[in-house]
Image (cartoon, rainbow, N blue to C red):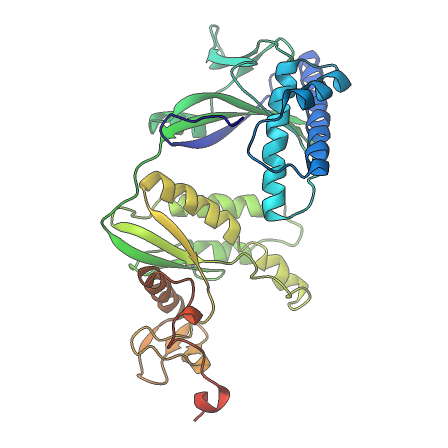
Length: 371
């Protein structure tokens, strides 16, 4: 049986609140509950992986009862954890083809187990009431955060789903916000974006941001902590200043395997600095922003985009000279990242994955390149 979703497609965002004001007794009860949920979910993951069951169907009642009897929990909680295990198995089988080993104590609870309501007394903003059905009966007072207030001010509504977690001695709650997903734009320009460790984000429509992060990375000390969180904050603020009004499609580089076979190539100091090139974080943030603005996001092959002349259509490795692009065929000059951004936009307009998919864009041989 599959769950039917008849409501319009929704966007979901989460806001994390740390439970710093919970007393020791409640914290101990909550940690024990999260540990039990982790153990039950891992049991269901092992069970579904052994059966090679990676479908989107809900777990059958016999399997739910098997987990219920083994761990002494309620049927409703076992069914919810089995559903989470099914989703985790599908994701692990799709991406890594390896069985997932749960290490974090996190669980997602629905409206059957809790309710989120305004706090009636002073000093707190919300009260998270765990109402039983397998979960402990607790009331957790919560302080609102700047991020949560910004979501509510932007028109997001609080969902009935809450995620609880414990990691490194900290208990936290993630409150979900929901909003109707806008339709994709039909008017606007196709824009390419080149991600660069040194120059930040360069767009084909002339926008440029994130270049201040390079100087910050160069100033980090060897044993300085929380440097990646600092760069994430800088890039997040930089993305807020972009103009999305005239963009219909955004094409970025597919950098999933950019570091493959490069282990040991660079010195340790350079590797430490290159680790702050957070292209995966940027791709996730761009996906969220494009979803909110109704923009189609596509990933393209980055091969030869900084060496291919967008005017004459000739490829030559000599075209790229550091940060400068000078075509040896027609003499066209441009910044190498800006030229790559224009080529990514061209791939989006042509509807192909990479320049190698074009019949006349194949790299020339060494004899042809040097005449």
